[in-house]
Image 1: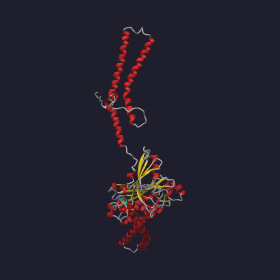
Image 2: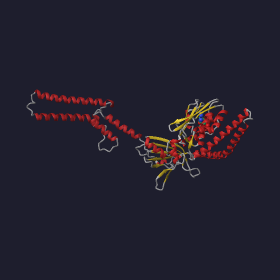
Image 3: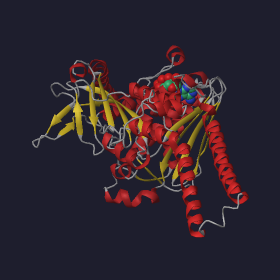
Length: 503
Ligand code: ADP
């Protein structure tokens, strides 16, 4: 038997035409029969009831034949699709060589349906990890269901069991930036998401077998295979321990240096005040430079000590009602001197009548110092650095704008990372690569955000925001003015260290 092939795209049109022809043939035949009966004057001799019955019977039969013909392709396709859908059913799937399938010209169409199903099946990934392979991987894999329960983990995964044999991830996430909080936010708002945490430790420093991992979470809301969240952990203990040891050593040294530096700065300022009338201009200039260097040294020491605290999740701040302009005034002489000795112009517009902010005075002064110091350092000779502040909703937003070397887009994402210094900075300008890292930590510990806008060669604008005191006063009162209260109320503000804020 010759196999009929109809182009899939033409099938419906051809089938419809066939149905219309068939209907026309039936109607014509009926009319011919009626005409013969009338011409031969046979109708009056037939009982009228019998005639009506015959006509209805004829109509039903033709309709039935017509419908059967019209719906056969639909029937075949429905059986084919039911078969590939994996739904329980007791219909036989159509065989592409079956007489009806070939006769109706549906062979290609059914074949296409079967092929598509086959293709989809071959792309389905079996997400149940083969334990023999997964257990040999150096990274941890943890799979969790929609309730956050661990349903699989491989050998390298940091998972522990409690007394009830329930499994838990053994990682110390930053208090308000854990997997639990990420998942809680995801299940409410997102269909899918992923997130990365850096330097998450299994135990505090000094604990035997302590590991430090980078962690990546993948989330798919309502995933059909039941594995809603997959967590991958990469053990980077060796790399990070080196950093940690270096930081431990540096912070001990920094701690020891703090006392003598404070004394040097004190004597210097007394000397400058006392000697100013008798010093010649160039001598006074030298004294000022000494003072600037001493104050910068003191900023570095503060940054290092704060980083050590922050990395151990101890950046607990006492926030009180402060005036931003007053905080700036406390560091203004120092910064003005830095600008002056570097031949740069610093103009500051922080209105004194802005609402009071919730701030830790010294920490915020450190952030402003870091940002202005960077703006001065990375500006050209004679450059202008502008500082401004204004209300932004329930926050005060402060910006530090320079016209300096700017920041290439490619390094933007690293800027707030620990020890990050761009190539050019390393070669030309002194620094530690800790200023922005700790500034971000401090601002986020205030429940605020820090960010930057810049283009290479076109200067940079760093902005940070801190909450207006009255908007967080209740929460602060409830937590004895410790920052944890306001960070808790705004989980999500504290972000992944590696990402940049969106000021
Ligand atoms: P550093 O001690 O190197 O200044 P920071 O953490 O303060 O460390 O800054 C990190 C890097 O960000 C700097 O090395 C520099 O490359 C870049 N950077 C910071 N501020 C500016 C700025 N205002 N203009 C251009 N680059 C900047």
